[in-house]
Image 1: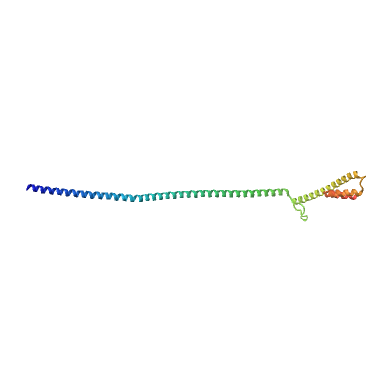
Image 2 (image 1 turned 30 degrees about the horizontal axis):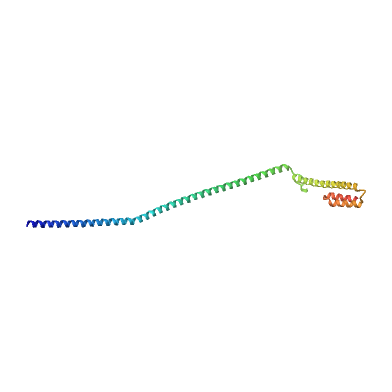
Length: 220
């Protein structure tokens, strides 16, 4: 009887031990499956997050590049605006200098003209120390008197020149006719001499000489 009881107790113990092992194995298997599932889900989440993170990183880089581009463009525009402002300032300075130069040149010309006028007035006063002549004859100043004298002198010189040319032309015609007459006296009649003198008259360009030839023709 004791053996039967011992055998029964041993069997119960074995059954209980096997049940505990089976429960532990089941729990362990369940835990392993759960861990694997969590690990798989985490990996899947990480894999799903990688493109999103990459897209975010690329967007961030794009935005940074755009900001850099805008900053460079702004700096370029500011530099261009500065260059244009400097160019405009140079042009305005050049215009002011040119305007100043022209104004100075105008002042210089005015001063020169004024100085010239003063010299002329001074010279005129020097040449016209007093009134002369009479209002009745239209000569009231010395320079008018001088102009009248100059005109008279010019007319006299022209008249003397004309008379001198006439005398010279007459003498020339006489010498020419006399020389021709001396050579052809014995061979030429009066009509022939007149014809020759007519030819000389037509060929002569000097009016005074031509007139002298005409006068000599009348004597032939």
